[in-house]
Image (cartoon, rainbow, N blue to C red):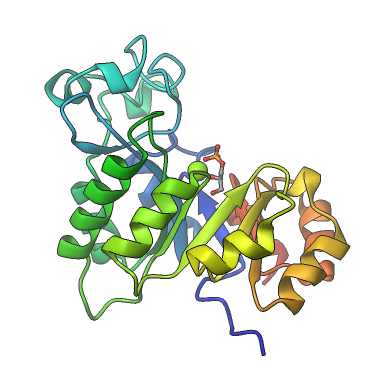
Length: 247
Ligand code: G3P
Ligand code: MG
């Protein structure tokens, strides 16, 4: 018997990134204003091991920095502008720390999916640091978050550090061994690129007892097709529009 997945159908992908710069506190606040009850974000490590919220390997696209984030210490990351590239209203928006993001979610009553995005070779360290911070700062009485990663090593580490929090293994294309690895990592769900998902795969995963999530779905018609397949959640850059469509 499949358990009800512990997340809503619409999840703001990196916050509300069409309306505010992705993976910033402004983006998470915007998602809450949009009506989202959950957001997804990416966590990675600075050179000196601080957990910060950022998607790309390189700083260039979403900040005024250049080069790999993983090669820069926290103090330098902290001086970057992660909002001005998006628009003048957001100039000076910093790269958030994990602690800052979690404090904001607790204040706003937002649930979250923390995606662990390790630099190659730092899969264990990234998961250990992020999960330890989250365990210490997320209120015990608040609903548990969902922990995800494309990295199986980070997922195995998450299972060791915080076994009670539900896990979601991410794929681009679903791997052939999904059933074995899902059991090994004891996940509640799988997340996959919606472009590579089929109704058959969704059914097979659900029949095996797992939830299925699809990223990144920015077209309402496509979201309705996925919903008709019975998918459990979509990550979207347009949470306001999706929530309206599925009200
Ligand atoms: O968790 C879904 C999605 O965020 C995975 O891909 O590259 O947007 O982090 P990406
Ligand atoms: Mg992500």
